[in-house]
Length: 350
Image: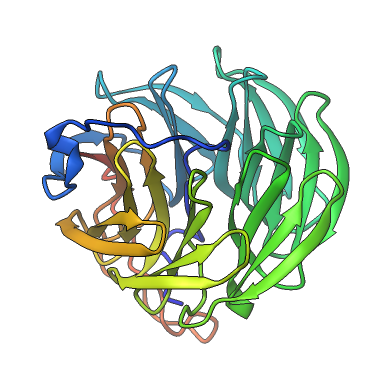
């Protein structure tokens, strides 16, 4: 798969318990065809980036960036805080019931625990596998899960006690994961092109499902009402999987270089952000139907995203790129350089 210029990323899923679709949807968000870049927020600084996560209660957008997490208020258009000392930062998971957030640090194989209200770091937990990448909070157990790319495993952490409670071997390189809110979770296994279903209480694998027609799945989102998974694939497809049986239901085309996705339960829209500079908008017409609605131009490199489930805004991040450095024997195809100070958030509105 063509990876990002700035690390490995995946997807965001909205919700953890079944949510009924809203009735009488506002016209401006009912079709999805009106999405456009309405605003840009300059963040600046240096370094690469990965996941972003939105807290609708506090209107905070968390951005992994270099060795810190930037906190942006999209309404004010300002950086309102930073969480430092997160080496090799990948993802941010939020646990509103605990008043805490959790950050996966790939470089030192740890999780930074912070206070959602003050943004102060309250603990650091060492995980059991190398390079924790994706991170997920499971409301059913109160556990935080890191998905360790170097260890081909998941580490379970007690979200209140800041202690590791177990490790689950996954048998391949995990990408993003989503929880169903009932003690189950699903994770993409990128190098095997499959989804693993596992029990978040017993830390046992329930099933392995091959992803027919999907190469190297990375992005993953979930519709809890219809129990459907949406996997973004390297071969420019968004694949729908029945989360009860593993059956591949259907698929639809998306852009190139997918690295994140989201599902909006209020509108039935599915989103996939791609590094070629597009946001694919699709509609779940029925549990077994997925219809492309729009391909919205964003900017090259804007392949990670977050969704505001209240306003239905979508956030993507990127930067300007300069020429790549000279090739070396160790790096024969170097990535383009990132222009310092150009990191920004693009706000897409319906």
